[in-house]
Structures are given as structure tokens and as C-alpha cells.
Length: 216
View 1 (cartoon, helix red, strand yellow):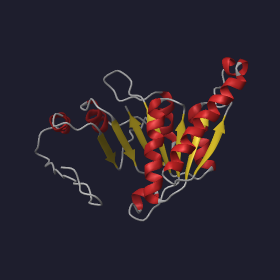
View 2 (tube, rainbow, N blue to C red):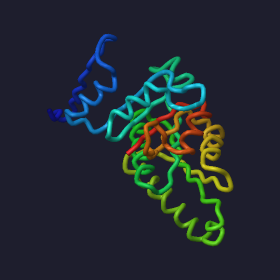
View 3 (cartoon, one colour):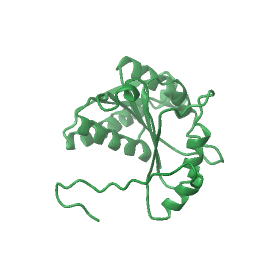
View 4 (cartoon, rainbow, N blue to C red):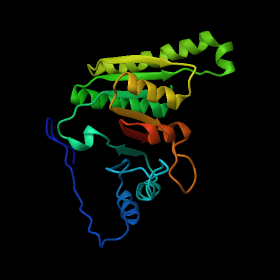
């Protein structure tokens, strides 16, 4: 039902027993009720190789719609009800990175916490030939994020990294800005494994900050 003005939205909780059917089957069954976003959050989500563990991969593959995968780390696990966020959101001008920025803005507004939008400049030969065009694109993308944040009274800083691989740029900015939450828009790749591309995989493996991956 639609909540009344100023009324909290209804939250339905289902508890599974260890003897219930496999979690993948449960998710597939629940998805048929019309859910269009699956949130997955566990304390430990990495295997030794830095990949998603089989439990999370199985849950994600069982759901055909958009995903939000949360990996808490550090103080967010030790004191989850007392920690604020310092958010970093990489942006690239794609629809999924814009959606990630929207989520980052919503979180920043809710917790009144700082947020930085990071644009990683193209470092290839084409970028050198089209430097002016690249800078205009960079400015347009970051301007859009700033305007989006302004509509919700959220102050957002911007940063640009060039001449470095995207994952290295994200990790470097996270360390420099002391960001403890990275919000990334990612694309799910075809296959029987949960894979969001090399950049997301490297950030997932190496980041000491908490992560929120959003997949279309």
C-alpha cells in the first residue's frame, strides 16, 4: 500500500530457517512477486582470490533485475549504528554511473555526510588528440552531478584523475580523501559467474573502504 504523507514505508521481513529451500530458489520465488531491486549484504563477501563468494554469486544470478551489493568493512562492521559516511562515487557519464550518483546523493542527504564525485579522464591516444572535447565532457558530467546534489541540498566536491588506470584512480582518491564508502555503478557481465568487469573487481579486491555496487 502507498504510505500516507510523512508515514514510514512498510517493511516486510521474512526469516528463513536452515532447513528451508536453497536461498537461490527462495530469491527466484520472491522475485516473481514483482520486486525490481535486490539488496545483498553480508559481513564477509570476499573469497581468497578477491572474487565474490559462491553464496553471493548464487543469490545474484538467481535474480534477473537490478542489484545492490553492499560490503561493509572496518568501523562500519564494528559500530554500524554509530558511523557516518564519507562517500566517493566514480562517474563516467553512463546511465548506470548516474544512477549510482543518485543513490550516493540520497545517502549523503540522509546521513548529512560529505560526498565527492570522481571523474577518471581517458588516458588513451584518442584523448590526447581530442583533449578539449575530453575536458568538456568531464566538466559536463561533473556539473550534472553537482546540479543533482544541489536539488537535494547536498554539497558535493569534485575530483579528476588522469594518466592512471580507473581502479588505481578510485583507490588513490579514496585514500587521499579518507573516504570510507565507495558507491559504484557497474554492469553485470554475461556468464555463470558474478563479474562486473576488471575495474570493479580490482576495487572490490583492494579497497579497505566499504563498498556499494549498483548494477542495472
